[in-house]
Image (cartoon, rainbow, N blue to C red; front, side):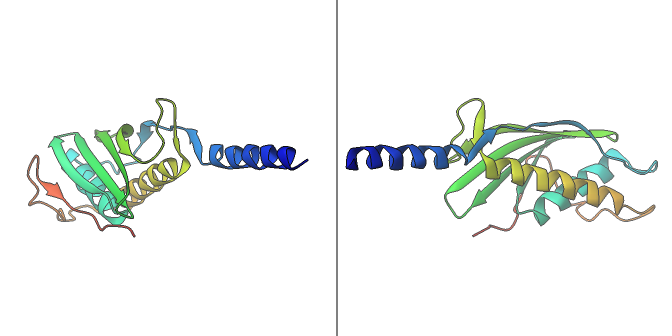
Length: 151
């Protein structure tokens, strides 16, 4: 009887740990809903602001491509590529540490972080106003723009 209870406990633990992973969700060609006056530079600034608000460290690789890194609790790390133009953007998984990535699934928090980033990018795009000065004109390709670290 105790052996059966031990087996049930092990199975319950395995079921609980499986609940923490989910299929990885890349965001591909999400519409920006950018105002007609928005330039590629405006979109880049909005994406940087969104990343920094959500705690991502942003690095411009080239026009239309950012690499972003999120470190949570000093232990969990996710890296993504953000491709964009004036019509749409994509957020694609690049690398991670301690998020149980196995090629198909990843810790479900990763998908939440990416979903929050997507929503913030769209929020920043809706907030664009004509003639608004770029907030981050000093950025240079390859320069790291640190986000806040999450505990």
